[in-house]
Length: 58
Image (cartoon, rainbow, N blue to C red; front, top):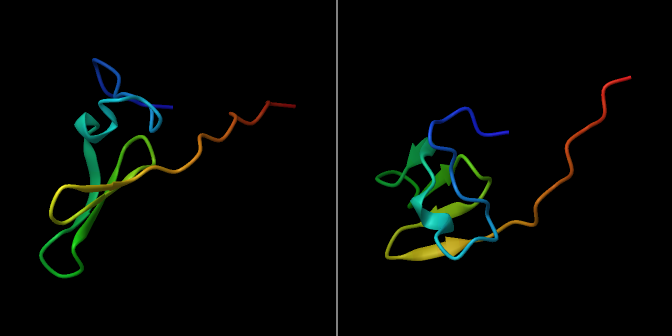
């Protein structure tokens, strides 16, 4: 679940790359992890991961 306001787009949305970066490794490894679970690759690449359902609290 995204804690940002406004919430970040999902990893399957057309604007998925607009999500906020939560872990940045662009200079050393060439990628950044976005809030929606997608991976932003150096040079305009975007690896979209399938969305996972939220766990149900018992």
